Length: 155
Image (cartoon, rainbow, N blue to C red):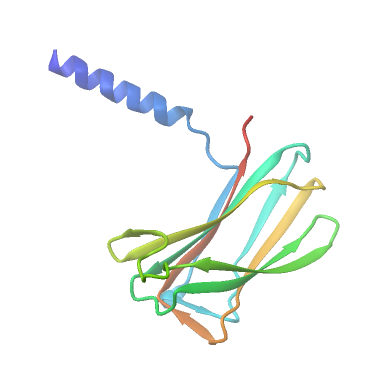
């Protein structure tokens, strides 16, 4: 009976995990020696095939618990399929005003996300997203990686 219950549990876990859809795009850039210099600009190419759908964009920023600042400023540069460009500044809070971690802490890693929900893109084709660090210091230390995930909004 016990083996039967374990088998049913494994089957249910497999069914639940197989029903979860993968994001249409999910890539990250790992910083060598955990340093993000101003000259390093992680870039991501996202192919959009349906302009009628809505998309959620999530930027994930991971640092060590030795990260020296309470936030990070960065620029999101976007280039559309027809060559139009935009440059927008954004802030990700790493700590709360009381000094606690704003993101999820696992051991010595803190992961914080910034999400743009329900965005519609006007043109089919490749969109290029480039991230530039916008802190006045030349180099940010204790930065592990930064990533971009794009998911279709399901109705």
